[in-house]
Image (cartoon, rainbow, N blue to C red; front, side, top):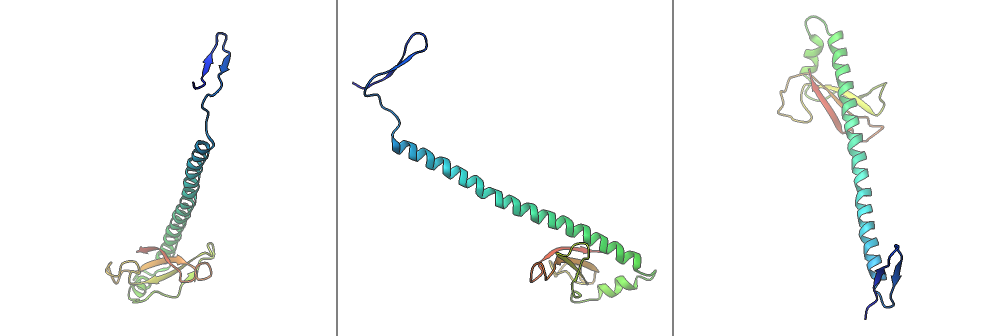
Length: 145
């Protein structure tokens, strides 16, 4: 006869000999399932951090691009010769590192680096990672103006 746990009046419990308990195998399996869940959760956090950094870099690049466009518009003459000079560039200018953000650099071009079919002849500022920060300088943001 198997043992069982009986409730006694007054909240006391008794245990009969031979009652089945939790085996070591059941304990190991439950710990493995728990650890698998913890590992899955921990693997999620680096992806979230990477996405956060990319979003922050894109936001910063958009802000710096807008500032550079405003600077060009401010410094351009009435005839728009500076914008016209940028629009005829068939290749981007040499990237210049931003003083306020050394991880990023800007250049000007008359063609898109992200989509070559996108309005050629339109002046644009191109924001990319600086060579010092990321060799190859991946393009982050491109703003036609």
